[in-house]
Length: 185
Image 1: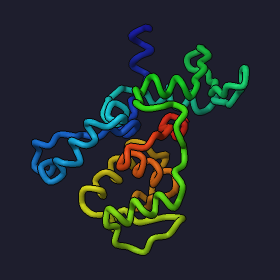
Image 2 (image 1 turned 45 degrees about the vertical axis):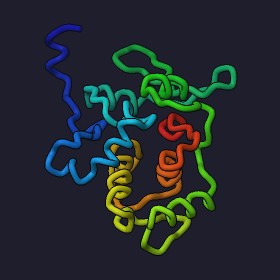
Image 3 (image 1 turned 120 degrees about the vertical axis):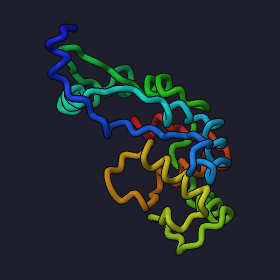
Image 4 (image 1 turned 90 degrees about the vertical axis):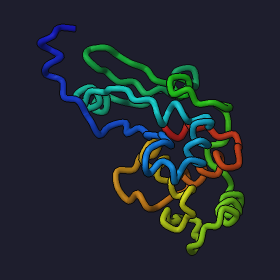
């Protein structure tokens, strides 16, 4: 790639926000148990790996992306810099190094979610549609914060946990099989 072309690329500093999981920092000491839990989890690489992605590449990808099926497998097909790319759910699972089973659940039953949140001492009014991150105990509030900023499709309202995010949290807490790549794909 030519040097002239590289100077025209804008770097998106706010894209792909990674978790900074260092328990030795001033604020990290308060969250040491949850940081250690996340470091042992099957999503650690996905939430902590910092990769540089150019805003222009993202924009070209999003402008040309379309969903296609080949032999009953779904792919996102897009053209970036004149090169056609096909990305499958298996590719997402492999590249982000999600542990566990790629064929796991993608939505935990509501009864299991409610039971888990009550056991971790959620102290607000529980609704099956949304719950508030602020009503979680400190360690679980940190877990929700990390997952909302690193693994959700949200751009605002970072205090609410909806069904997919609650399923993700419960699957990590209870070590249940969960298809994280399906959530992203």
